[in-house]
Length: 252
Ligand code: GLU
Image 1 (cartoon, rainbow, N blue to C red):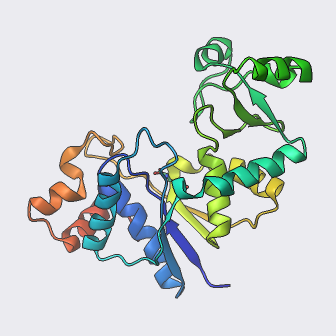
Image 2: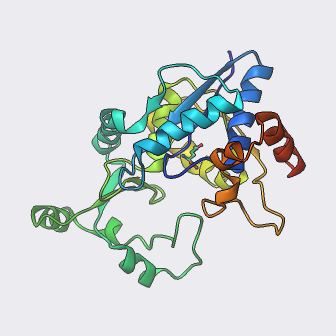
């Protein structure tokens, strides 16, 4: 089976060296295998995403010398695919509504926070059908969680979640190798569980180290000087960007 990789940024800011590394890594894995490289815009959280950042992503990646297949999949255009996956989970009784606020979850949490915030204490899993119906009739906002594992599959404000959208998209796009930073390694068992429940193929996974600055801190949006846009404006070439990523420990 031909290798299909993808780079899946969220248009919430300009791309920095860390994103460039992720994109180059994914494109390199596809190229080495004579496979295909895809780009996906992860913009389910419309309040944090901006069209100019999406345009910036395309501009920066093209400048780096990357080529991807068209059309680019934009998650916000495919909410019906996520709704279909939710309906399938719901029909089989695999999800439940959760009315908890963030503050309630924080207050009830007894274990330390994981990568996605405080662990969910399971409060709403125990609600009766009557209680659920009553709260829904009252118009209380609710997220949807997996009964087996409490993972959020639909947020209160957005009828999908990061994990649900990613597994649906990876399957629909035929992605066979998911490459991303080690900071997302925690997501593999969660996404594998969703793939199993939804009957989706399981891609392979490969994680790359997360680039850090001179002081060992992860690169972040605050590092303005390290955006591809500012590097380009400062006269840095794409070849120098690649060399800099390698000097920071990035291998691709
Ligand atoms: N959209 C995610 C991010 O910007 C990446 C998701 C993924 O690769 O699964 O970090």
